[in-house]
Image (cartoon, rainbow, N blue to C red; front, side, top):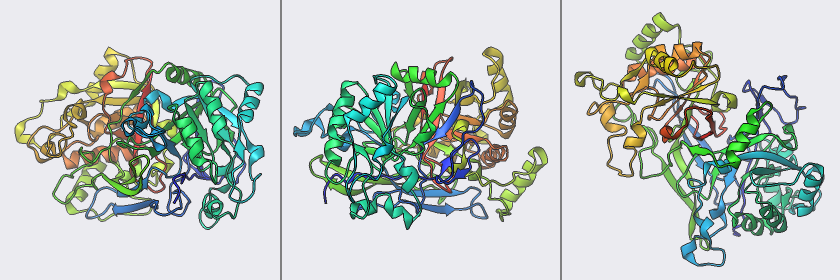
Length: 574
């Protein structure tokens, strides 16, 4: 089979502030906002088994989600396992997709052959959206053939708006994914029908267009087609023409029509897989007010901090559980196609949905509406105790794809709780030092009050100190959970309640999780989060690099339907 099997997928549903899913065929209308209020626009396709979210050619794996454990007698949490390939739905391409490593000394070798998804600098993920309208090309070729976006289309954009430059994200808008990303069997039109020459190809740039953009110093692109590679023969030439300059791009974007031609901030974030030549991601924009200009300036001036550790098979990025047999799916690399020229294996991943940096949605610890789980007797006692003080935990249908993007982005407020390390009694272990309301208030007294929409980040230092490549390492998870060492600092439910009263929606930590090592205390913390419609972002690192002022936190999880976790990437722009 040929190598230009450029992949893809996308969604016809869009998630807005409310998290509601609207079919793409409906007329798009913007929510009423003031001129100064930023608005988040989702450009991500829904990942679900009945959608054409993976490349249909053999041997690319199909996406799978397994609801491994559900809330009930055997589990207090909803636990999911994912089989996911980087060529899934809205996705990121980076240079090693087509550029060979320097030491191979091949015609297409170059330094960018080492620029994997875990090595791309965080500033390159975002910039000013420059929407190049190529809707006139849609379905304008013969079956199996892509209409070509040329340099002339880009020049037409410049004539109407402005000259492109470094810091721009050029987005090719054809409305292809909006029209054709549908559940099967209609979904075959998205990719499979093109490969079988039953339908016209999706519009895409030719190699000369990439060379033109390189002369403009554009480093980040996007397309709402399934791939950046025109079919049937120009997929690889177009990829190499751009990637050899160190470009990266989004494939399978959607809803680009919600953007103005210029002025919006655009970003694509995705899990940080070691040595990934591509990766599943979440694309979104911010429109309105002064925030887009501020974030665009940060990316243009390379003021960005990556907060996500690299996902790798040789570090413990998933929980071993509170008890034997309670562990989560370990993170595994699944090789499925070797590319001889690049000396590289295409690979997907079998992973817990909370591997590495991830989202904690309300539904993680809460059952769906209408269900009354039969908890284990011990947990039923904890429920009664929680209800007495905090009210019923309640239920939630808010899985990952329904969490509004605006909830996981905001001004970064880093609360240093490293002083709590070493404050528990040995006899109490396993125990985590508790981050209390008083700690939050002390922070506010020293700095300033928390504001609604801020993202509170607890700086424990635990992952920075203990995440190592040694497979025998026990300091990150095993020793704290077993009581052989102190647990990481974690907030209790009182702290969650206080933060909700301050208008906080998202709480993040550079510890393995927000729950800590005591199972009862952890569950009460997650019940407090879920019952108050708050979310968590766990497993950060490098938090000490975040400036005290003017730092904006951005996190986005892959848009997986019915997922009770959500792998993603966290960065800060300052």
